Amino acid sequence: MPVKVSKEKCTGCGFCVTTCPFDAISIKEEKADISEYCQMCSACLTACEAGALSTGEGEPSEKNPFAGYKDIWVFAERKQTGPQSSEVAPVAYELLGAGRRLADARGSELCAVLFGGSDEEARELLKWGADKVFHAANPAFDAFNDEPYARLLSSLALKHKPEVILAGATAIGRSFFPRVAARLRTGLTADCTSLEIDAESEQKNLIQTRPAYGGNIMASILAPRHRPQMATVRPRVMKRADYNPEREKTGRIIPVETDGESLKSRTKVIECVRSTDDAQKVNLHEADIIVSGGRGLKGREGFQMLHELAGLIGGAVGSSRAAVDEGWIPYCHQVGQTGKTVCPKLYIACGISGAVQHLVGMQSSDTIIAINKNPEAPIFNVASLGVVGDIFEIIPLLVKKIKERRGA
View 1 (cartoon, rainbow, N blue to C red):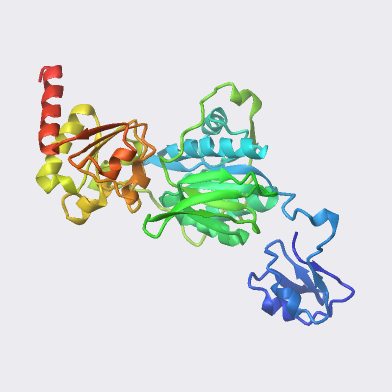
View 2 (view 1 turned 45 degrees about the vertical axis):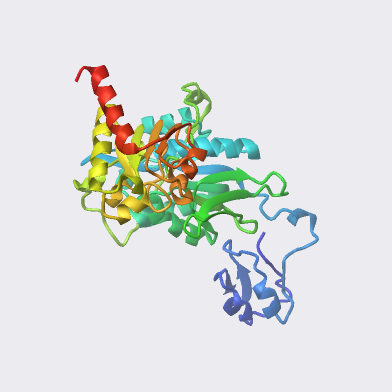
């Protein structure tokens, strides 16, 4: 609940207006007026000489200032697949998996928010675990634009008061989600790798975990005095929810009406042009098999082995930061804290020691095979299968065996 104003005591002096760091106070009809942006910082209480402001402490109805907030929201991002086509991005289904777990822990509903797209895409979100889908079907949202996206999502949040809002830590999520947090006057934790509900706290706050200080520590962040709690989540670190077509029968699609105000923008998207550079060809996020190399490959020539192996098994080539810093392979292949977070079915780490910065980006892979000549390398601590040996002997033998099996 925001700070309360005693109209009988308020003199309309305006001291509280200049004191509020959130611009949540204004003077209306010669009296102070507190908006929904109040963050209960109490800075205005000491400024009010008339004693007209209070927090309402001690009143039974205000023991839980966030009693009106409920539900877990997931923003269902859409990605462009062609000049005139797009689809729901895979990260949306991953967030539904994480959101389902959080919603069950809170005893609340899981809601997806879809801007643009078709009714079929909205129904798919129900099948992937959403209880409700807020769908703004206006074609104006088919092309991403920061301002209308931020304006509509923040207005929906102010109206329905979700407890948690999640988005992918993608180019789109990183672009407009901070705008939403600023409009809602709440905090935002970026690039989370883990989300949990604090069962021991009375308010059951969201524990948002992300790497900090270059990946040297994992920081757990809380927002106990702000709602909604907002976070962007790295793609490929969360497991998808179970797909169940029967959920469509019990779920609800809620149409979102849009008007000129919600579509207002100072910029206009004329055309979306897909990049044709090498970075777009390296889609580590969606690869089922990744063969990664590190400093142990000793140069560009070492990565030629990995490209050959990846080509034989239908995989993509990744790398550690050390190899990218040496100039052996482009940055678009980098996996880790400062690169891409991946979650393939099979991850083969070749000559990678396993620094924590790299582990953050790949340790959620289904199966990890580590090849390293150092038996004490940290990579073996997360590996499903470890091979101690020289990669310049093991990889060529592996390639040879695969070719023999295929009769090449």
